[in-house]
Amino acid sequence: MSEEMQQEADGKIKKFMYVNRKAPYGTIYALESLEVVLIGAAFDQDVSLAFIDDGVFQLVKNQNTTDIGVKNFSPAFRALGDYDVNKLFVEKESLDERGLSSDDLMELTWEDEDDDWEEKPSIQLVSRQEMKTLLGNQDVILSF
Image (cartoon, rainbow, N blue to C red):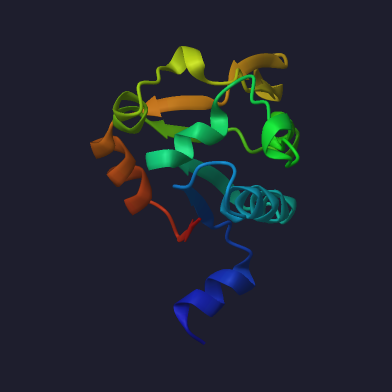
């Protein structure tokens, strides 16, 4: 039996990183990523998300899609904490290159049951170099 098959048989939790590089609207990538993340989380995997390049726009607060005639799915990000998805890594350089800061992002939190259910932020700003390290530590990377 291969090592990978043995790990799956042993029930080892795998680290899944979903990399979001596209703007939230205009393509299906952002919405598809969110749906796949929720499916992965339902299978008790170690799920995290990376927001790079135009993907940082997915987390901008107060999105209004009325004028473009599509459904605003950004409120669904607030449900991620309920699925134990609380590691959302945003590349600082991508924000800077687009004239954004952490103040422009939604406030997403999760409740830490090990810390008396204290609400903690889900979004973590990381440098480009830190993002490379994070990506290198994953078992599975899915890019959208």
